[in-house]
Amino acid sequence: MGRLAFREQVLRVREDAILTAVNRLLADKGFDLMTVDEVAAEVGIAKASLYKHFASKEALAAAALVRLLERTMAVVESPPVPAEATAFQRLRSVVRWALALQVAGEMPSLPSQNSSLRAELLSSKDYLDLLMRVSEKLGQWIVQAQADGDIDTRLPPEVVLYTIYARGCDPVPVFLKGTGQYSDEQIVEWVLSSCLDGLRSRPAA
Amino acid sequence: MGRLAFREQVLRVREDAILTAVNRLLADKGFDLMTVDEVAAEVGIAKASLYKHFASKEALAAAALVRLLERTMAVVESPPVPAEATAFQRLRSVVRWALALQVAGEMPSLPSQNSSLRAELLSSKDYLDLLMRVSEKLGQWIVQAQADGDIDTRLPPEVVLYTIYARGCDPVPVFLKGTGQYSDEQIVEWVLSSCLDGLRSRPAA
DNA sequence: GTCTATAGCCAGATAGAC
DNA sequence: GTCTATCTGGCTATAGAC
Image (cartoon, each protein chain N blue to C red):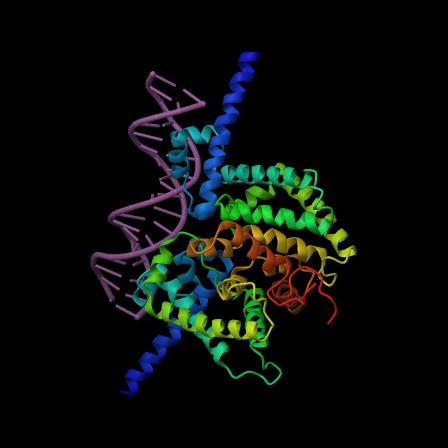
């Protein structure tokens, strides 16, 4: 029993190491250009061993995305700091977290287009459940923020939700980081501002 | 002489047909998932014939992107309609044009990440020249719009420029179109608004 | 469950006849 | 310049020994 639990722990640690490698490679090159050989090399095990843990390359990526959604759910459900009481402030906080992940090179980017990956994701109950839970929570905040007068009521909540999700594959943070001129924090704040406040000037508050 | 010019015209028309197919496929599946066989099939010629016109898959995509930049340059240099006199209005007009291309499924999407395509683009004088010309023109408008008080002066022009370029690979229009609930025009206006005005409410003008 | 070795496949690119 | 047929390399996935 203790022995079994120990082995199971070893298994989970190894699989977590695999998913960390997958996550990094997905952030770096995306699904199509990531090869299973690279994943195995980065983890330091043989490719065949990988396939004992995950059935396919798609399953590998799906597991990494499920882990990302679990972390997102944890962020969304964490108790708010007192300074972030409104729905709008909580939304901003989540977007800021996602942008920080992106700048740090830890945001796995999936192809939004055609791919065998899409089919795998759409048939993964874990993935779909988590995605729905995150979307429902964010959707509630969006509706609340609109009722509070903080988010433009002319935009359907669906448009706001997609726009926020799209920050997860926004190329701007990576480009700005590539110039080497700005700090990570500065980049995050600029992209956050362009998303929430827009490019246009706003009258002083 | 006339004969030669005629043959050259036939050549250009054929190559334009090829690039139109490439453009559509790039918009549909992206560079990595597009296959040269598909391009040949869509044009209705053999794959080997394609390679008489373009040296590689990368060259094929690069040529399509050059054509896109040429069209962009034409839009940027076209005389403004009287109602769009300010730099900000001209910028908005260009972004709207790009979003309309996107919704119509005619915006080729290149992988912003690692790829053999990047190397090809960086070694294409045509591509780099056009990209610089477009960027300079847009950059001038951005600076002017900031001087006019229309664009947030806390954002460096570079950040504004990248944010505008990023609209070319924004997944939101395609997602919204996928719901089948909204008209193309409605989608363009919402995304344009979220980009320029932001998600936050603005005080009435 | 880990490894080495390899099967099987697919896509980019080319040979060579016409 | 167009075609058919083929080469080549790389990648996913698996066989089989330990």
